[in-house]
Length: 440
Image 1 (spheres, rainbow, N blue to C red):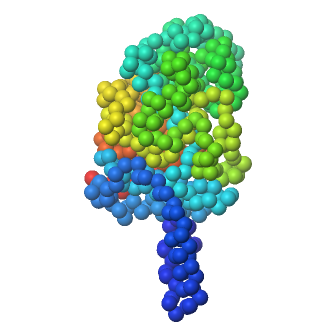
Image 2 (cartoon, rainbow, N blue to C red; image 1 turned 30 degrees about the vertical axis):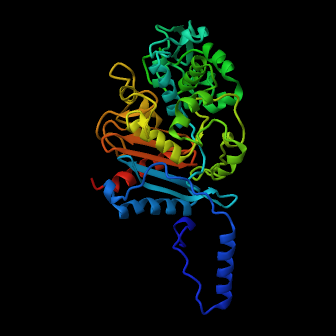
Image 3 (cartoon, one colour; image 1 turned 135 degrees about the horizontal axis):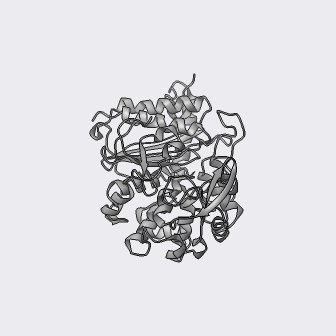
């Protein structure tokens, strides 16, 4: 098998015994000198050699070989992988194709649709308001939107559904840790799920923010608030609370409070026209099912800044975001959150009294609890993914993933466009590759 282009060896120089080839080479050099140099994206963090960061350089090459094989087998178009340890960039590569249909190679500053990695960004924006005393975690949702003051909770027995009153309000903390009772319609087939929007994206195309709030306030909750972790529209509602408190659209508030302060230049809810050529595209067919696949957000703007799924970013931007969290809320002298708030965010908020369904999202989540916006590993072993107790993470349904391991002073971001079940395979494999390359 020929090496895939990003990993191919550099071609040897033309022989001086071939005058035609020499003239062609000289012409290329002259033309190149006459053209402006292409701007190269800056590294998101200072670089360090793998050995100084406790990695084996040869073992890191397994990542190259892994993706070369996956790309050659047409299972993923390409990816950008960024690994930082102790605040230094150890590995930062673009592999494969950004858009296979057009023949566009992947670049390190390719822009990816984040899907649910949007949720973590939103929670951090909300926590900046929390630190200012504007958004207490135990403030009830009805304080911001009164229509949520008399919520009903579903009870399904023998296939029939009835409702009972919620025993306590939905609190902001419930929105951050997915214990509100709001669900996603696409996650199961019960009578309750059939009432809900399939996903954050589906909700954002169907209605605006006010419309979503009106819809959800009339639906029965899947669980009593504060009693069970269930993945759903909680963060979308949180984003609308942020807009109410900040008095600004979520994207504007997030940029002012977090993104621009960290130098996250390409993180946005709306990719401007001049950057759209950098959008990474999926393969036309799901490599497992063979069915057509696409990402609507790459083509059409939704009706509001859906906090659960609708943002875009780059590997560089998200690595800086993750490094800020690892640093206890600051990066390059800019403080976004206090160390105590980051510890609060990245501690388990489920405890023994809340039903923990986190592992239901994917097998690799066994042994995890949930903090504010992130899954948090609470036990050694159990999980199928390598890591440490205390590592925290979340992923996106379109193939993006990130995690922070405070014990190992490690931040990893992988940006790829691999929607469908294959993304779960990559999540386990990249963890195995990264930790398998560590020597200390």
